[in-house]
Image (cartoon, rainbow, N blue to C red):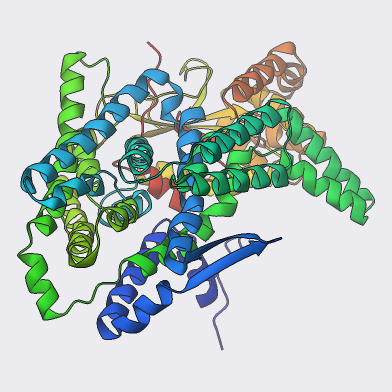
Length: 625
């Protein structure tokens, strides 16, 4: 017989093995695990039975339509077809950073752009120098591009989850992805046909036209994208560029308040009359409130992580690792040229550019992270895989291709090991120095329309704490109530965090929220804001006047003054000011939690999000002068 659970006022949740597995698969590292597993499988398969491995991926596959069609071997369908979806996701992530992340402040684009370009030039120079005079020198494009998905996944495994470092690294890596596609088109494409290339450009013009007309139907864009892909394939250019371009053209933006209110009305109508037509209308309304970029990232990411990239690895990473091959590859200059170019050239180019540009501009342009973040980002950028294997298959053949592949695979082992060493050394440093080395001194973009003001804002924790967390909340919102224990845990565990509450009552769904907000301001006038807030959350389901009066009475407030203050203009004006600031910051739902401009969280901030924000990686909101 099991003991009775203690009376805690909460229902304990014990995850099952299936739930634990789902949570693990949903994590950021799962895609990296899938890619590594696929690469290992390819190596084992090609070593044990190379005949069946080569035969499968060389099998022809054709698509016919009314006498016209395309025929390629299975490996080419993966490389030119499925990889288009991978580059589409890369474009979506880059566009989101450009619209909502650190890069929406355009001067911040300069440093990662230059770091990306120099981070390509240095490895190319090293590769050419190490292969000078040999036919292998023409394959310099192999060492240009980092594997974005694998590098980001491995960074979380061996290094850090810093959002600022991830943002910086994504921008740097998108630059070399774009450049790699240009190099494929110019240096490794033998014949380019003008007519199909012009057709692809014309279809891209149609995409821009229909977007300017406000067309949002996904099938229209899918059809146009397929047309661009086919035209580029027919032109002789690598069609994966179509995916990257379409991703970069997909806007990202916070959900507009008007769209959210319309979606609420549609859901309410369905609740009152649950018909199939109203269900469809409500679904469309909910979907349209979210930006196309966010919707597509959520839809495409699992397919890329667990199908596209692993299949690419399975099709391209197979090497027969017998003794003769390994002896030849280890003695081959091209294998070492690839490895050195990635493991030494990539970090050297990124670090030197970051340090040099910071010095030349006297700190006006600097990376969004500290020296340890730049060094760790540079070393993990030495992971070559996806695009490197793609270019290798175009630039090399025969035994030399196997040697180049071994160098690429070795970089995917050595670079994470070096990155691990960087962050292990960082972990040995004192807290203050570690935080500064990782975060740096670059000012953080602050999404908040109004700076935190200790004279005005409601603050828990030390007023001069270096880390600030701001929540826009609604006292009737159940998710704000769920966030409250997380906030208390954060404040209890850390003495260097200050928590700021601001009002965002969602009147369309929570009719009592604004009344409770005004009552809390009336309590604040008597110095009892936080005790009153605790009382509201303790009895969140009852925010009517009798219970608000009871809370005031229990706290010993002057009831006549409380009633007079909550009906006055000042509390209403305060709530309106907070709401205006919330909408200006892009907060249209509750809870909306800001740890910095680039680190906004919409929804309950659970322990996993706080861990990703990180005690050593928390981004600070500058205090007002």
